[in-house]
View 1 (cartoon, helix red, strand yellow):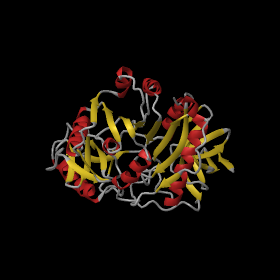
View 2 (tube, one colour; view 1 turned 45 degrees about the horizontal axis):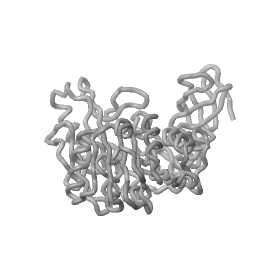
View 3 (cartoon, one colour; view 1 turned 135 degrees about the vertical axis):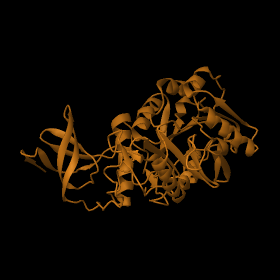
View 4 (cartoon, one colour; view 1 turned 90 degrees about the vertical axis):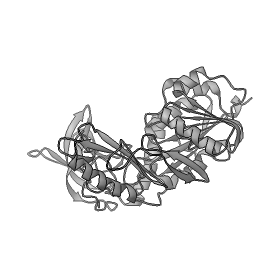
Length: 399
């Protein structure tokens, strides 16, 4: 459905579905419209803010008829803050949309169909789940919060509905410090909560980048605000279970291993494990975590993954390879290196359906079959989703 208001240059449209990236799909005046903060089934009046070829990027002017899955966002900053973009949806609709985004990317980008149902594990907490955050600072105006949607302006927030309670308390204390002291050297502040309290980098308001830890699936992990660790700690045990499955054997490789989230459980199942990580501070924590677990069958290599796969020795049999790259996925050199290593089985952990599909297309074109796809709602109230894709070498390529 489409009607046009020529004076205001707006369109009345119906949102057909949600696309990867979380935007709503509509059509008007020969354009394919991507509508921010929409819900499937909404009837909206929208304004086209930017046109690129036959695609228009639009924002909502008025909700004419709300979708059955639309709810009132509880956060007063919703729509301006760039942090959450799914608060307008029921939680069930959020989960369904994320599964459809994964299917869309697999089909459209990789020409792959997920084998069977894509099960998504919901978050135990739909709010107050976020154990890690990065706050932006605007020193001149004394602002602290997150970037506004589509800009580098700071949205000043007094409260964040997805922060873990301890980080919410930390936000209040840090806000007071930013408001009363000279913070011209600050651009952003990283925070993470562990079992012992909060780690903050750089030091401010009595907080510092101290080491904290979490016990997950029987393993103890140390980390700090100046290293990466996952956001939603409650889902890490099922995520690890899905990634490892029934894998066991002689040799496993863990690429982009970080502080060793997957490295430690892999070492319980394999005779030898090598973790590869470029970030020196993360490597320090990975080695500390391995040592504390008294695991003597693990090596942590402090190298970029592309460099490591380029110079790694060939293995007679590589039983299992796990990779958990950043959102941008793998460089071509990394994919080429993985294919040269010829692991019998793989688990690809990803937080971006599009880059995952791009990389799976390359892997499945060279001797691997997609065995399963599972999703985990690590980021409620946003379009982001964590995915585990498991691959197996085609039987014709086995020795």
